[in-house]
Length: 135
Image (cartoon, rainbow, N blue to C red; front, side, top):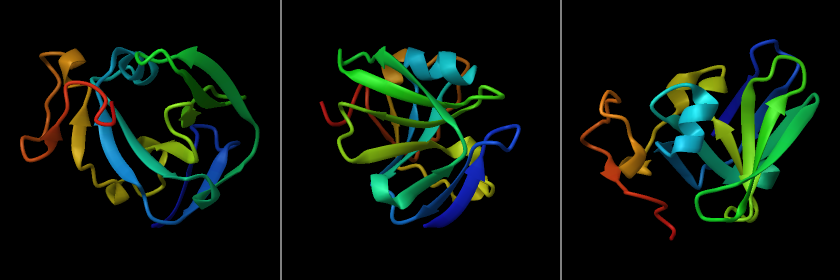
């Protein structure tokens, strides 16, 4: 995948050059709160494949698993753009909605479906995981 993207104001940009490890729609409550939507579409790539440009503000939190999760926001506009954490060694998450061409996002599964709101529509053709598929 060769792609680029960034935040709402354009101060935080990134380039991607590499193959995704996975592409999921996450329905956990934290992702719902961060996105303000039924799910957060995420692309996981090896760290060297994602090159951010601009200031990233990192927010550390405890994930459902109890492990540390890091959320990368634009310091100016507050858009959530990147993610990382203890459960993702060597991987960087990119929020698919921040891609310049969001059509590049090709999810293979819906995860944390046990937290999905009744009004959120899921693609019936995708695999479903009640929680973390790696747990």
